[in-house]
Image (cartoon, rainbow, N blue to C red; front, side, top):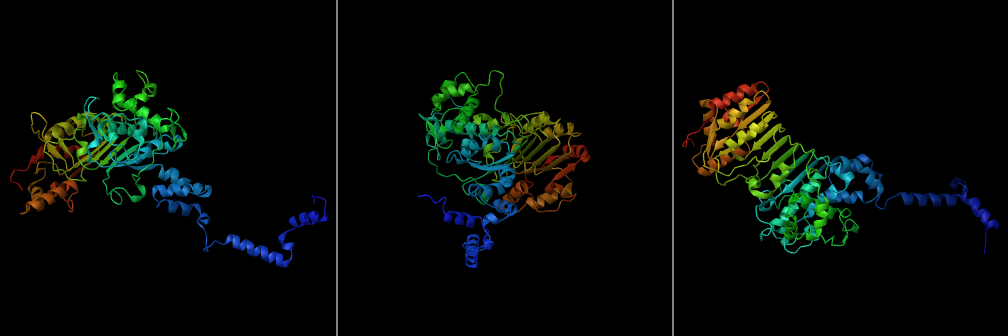
Length: 508
């Protein structure tokens, strides 16, 4: 039955075109009430969608990472209102926690971020929380077939399981994880600053703000030999970002050596050999580099910094190798005071030379000879030097103890280029180096001395790692530190070199 030609149809059409203000009063009141009910929220007041973008942006700054991302996924309106925070703050500085022995969640997040070109271009700084004193940030120099290196018959998807399998926690698995880390960092074209902080089990609320921590969490296997559920694509090189990044990482890790098949077999990655070879850049091709990385900051326990040059793969060895444009290096080992052997020594091997403009060493153990070599390599470019709480150790063999003036002489040669130098709490074992007059040395002696050995050790630790709460005066600089700036640097270095002396054995 058709109503197209009936009068009722015309009356209905006429009513549809009639403004509501011309309708009958009862009908008008009913429509106005319905509109009011539609606009009024269930609990009264404005909804989150009614807030201006400035308020939404302010709220977004206090949300944990996953909550913020969930907020953006709610609707297009909230996504647009949080775009500024997402691109300028959230992506500009990324925080991840890496604990290779227990979780790969942080590493997976970094891989997926680096594989998205539009997101990767926004990242300028990465803060990596790690258990700095934990062993697997370096892998011993061993043969590929060693039981410590062999990961068993693992397929490549096993390296992305979270938590990792027992086999992938071996030295070989850790070497692969570190290589994936560097391959991901190298895929961030705007990366300028890397910061490493100590993140033990109770990291939340201490070293990393709670909203910046990417929690290690159990995740279902999302990739297998044929399909990647995360990428929603076949697990093929060039399509699955996880497999692609893994191939690039292993290619650079093995440095395309002749024994590449042996390495890939020992790692359980024989199936990736054709794809790994496909990443070969040629004899003179481009290697993995962090092109724009200018600053490295580290704050954590000592152990991860020492003896890294003795390992086959090492976080620090690779980091310095891949950072040819490094200008600022700040190493702070003061989080956990070291009570290790006196000859434990930080090595500056593989540090890029000729570009370093700022060097700050705090709470480290290093020999005077190694410091002299470091200053000799970078003296022409250095402008800022800070040595704070540094213990001068003996050399490895024949276990000699070079005096402090070995590196002070080198610094004095480049004094004209230096704009700032700060030296405080330099010592050998428990014997401080003194530079000032008798009054200055007595002030330091009075601060460190105590009848109780426990109190003496506590005072010494405070002096070394945090500095005493004392006003800096001309007669207390052995206690509070020696700082010279601008034109004072040259004369200041000559003064320190000529007056440096080691406190007697029975001084404390």
